[in-house]
Length: 105
Length: 404
Image: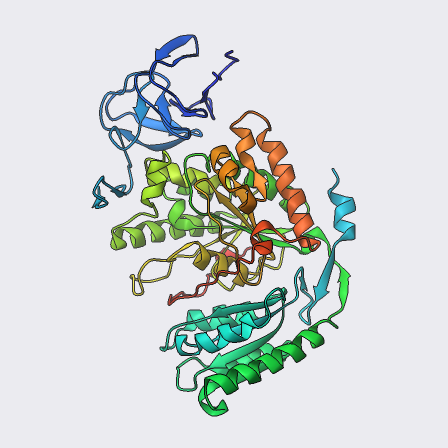
């Protein structure tokens, strides 16, 4: 099913990107091949979210659309979900609501 | 491309300043919250007719609100205005009425305290609107060309799909419009943080490039003072992690054209091209968040002359606006399936691999012409006419901001 640079569920927007965009919901057990590398997913990942296209080191810039969107807070293995837990802004803290609907950083 | 034949078919309502409207509405404007109910009762009597409610709720004077009301009441889509005053508020109703009258538009002020209270003011206002609707039906219609259109764009209820489907597609539509000589306006500098250098390099002069960079730095400073970035919890649920990532989404709506100018609310560009609207107040924060919601930004885009607003949404906004039609471009295919009645364009097709960004960009461009020719957008046909205007303060733009 894979075509150059695109699997059934993952989309790379820019050639410099180290993240892929989920374009169809990913379920635990899903296998996707990207750039000849197979990743087996262990969790649900919703569309619009990002996964690492390769191993990313702590402090490395994360690129989407060819533009840096922040830095890795920890080592991120290929295929991992990238979000608030492992990516931080280089500009301003991201505020969001926790499970109790309280603003958290 | 079908654009040139469509463009010849367009007609506009000719105004005294030479600008042309794609709609011909009567504005009913309250000048303080105390006059809001009377204004709404008048508008409610004209359901289904082009009578739109706008207003400013504050009792204390504000130069920004004055300028917004001046430019909105004389927008090319507006044929005339009824002003509703309680009588003791600070808003300078005389100056606003004079400004509107100078453009040749019918204008009337109802002062509730002088007219004898609620009921008499409603009756008096309704009678005036009936006459004004007959009067503006006589406004001449003349050929309208694409290079006379002003198109603004805004995003709201963003998720990670906004930046990869709807927003790049609007960028392609903006590129087509700019090539045809139209004015296109994007905002908001608070959502360009992290992208200052990329944007600066697109300015038509180095001096303008510097101004663009300064405007983003101003926004970054302002949001830091507020303790929040322009980032709502729904954004993170949708997969966006940082303000920079959200910025790419907002930024790519601008397309690839050179940037011709930096404007502030109420500045109306006279030459075709792409403009950045700086919506962040000047000076230290005084009145709170730069814009309290999407409609505050839409009102500012309209005050800069926008005939049509391209509104991209991933989570699914439903808003429209008073004065100018809002075209809804839905980025997320799942949202589109749930809320298709509210959506003019399904950009989610890009994510389903059913259409390219360029194809959806062309579809948006054709929808702009369609709506400009009189077809109602989804939000218009559903009756959405949201409006909000709050306190802000701005310095005038500097000489480097409009080099054209």
